[in-house]
Amino acid sequence: MTETTQTPAPASLTPTPKPSRRALVVGAIAAPLAFGAVGLSLAQTGASVMTPVAPTAISALKASGSIAAKGDVAEIYGNKFVMQDGTGKALVETGRQGEGGALVKPGEAITVQGRFENGFLHALLITRADGSQVRVGPAGGPPAGTLDWAKDKVGLGAKPDVPALTARVEAAGYSDIRVTGRGPRHLEVAARGTDGRERQLHVGFDGQVREKRVF
Picture: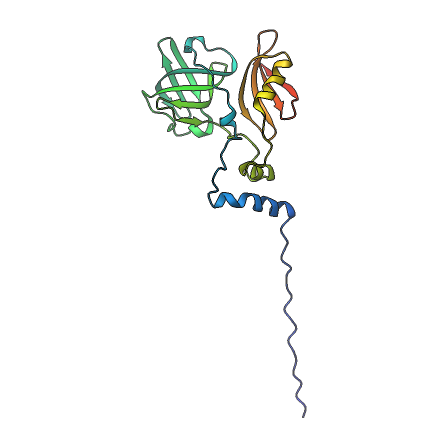
């Protein structure tokens, strides 16, 4: 009697999806961040390119894309707080980062820079008495996790030439030019038009200037 030995059929193998070329590039570029690469600063983020603005008296605050006031924290209401100086009070809005009321403390002396509109000072930057700063709102630059973001973190991303772009804005007829932040490939700018009114501008790294709104 002959015995027949059956060889089991090989188990079907599910092909492993290959990572996309984009994912490989992002991973390769971002890898140094995991090891604390030296020198990969946030020099291209919104906080670093913001034009400092000298604080004005709270009573002198007016509609503006970039203005600052200095005073003491009087009261805190969630993500909003009241700041006061010898001339008056202002209500400061801090967005999601201020939820819980932990950004500032009652009685603390601070300077707030941001957008003033409809009676609110929408904070972009809070400077404490010791000089330390808190950036409020989006960090600026490309969206996290994108190829542009990874390149930005290792110094390979698009770099705004702020002096040259400021000159382009001035050549377009604007004055009192203040950079308020940056996007993936543009700067957010507050400036004054020839009619004296404040404008919020979108200034591309290629030098294109576009008005977004008038205050």
